[in-house]
Image (cartoon, rainbow, N blue to C red):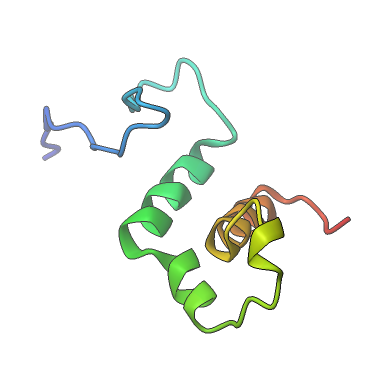
Length: 85
């Protein structure tokens, strides 16, 4: 016997806007997995863990993006299937 639940998954907001999930199948996005990956990465700070294992040799006065942000972006690009360029 199937049971229905009225609980909806809760994801962190993106740019101050809530992320709503609905599993009715009417409109689908091929990027939905990235949204879930972003949530897992954020909750467990995967990019921060990797960044803490590395030494950033860049000149701090010229750094625009933290090593953690660069790693997080690269994780998402790999998951989205983009080839290194």
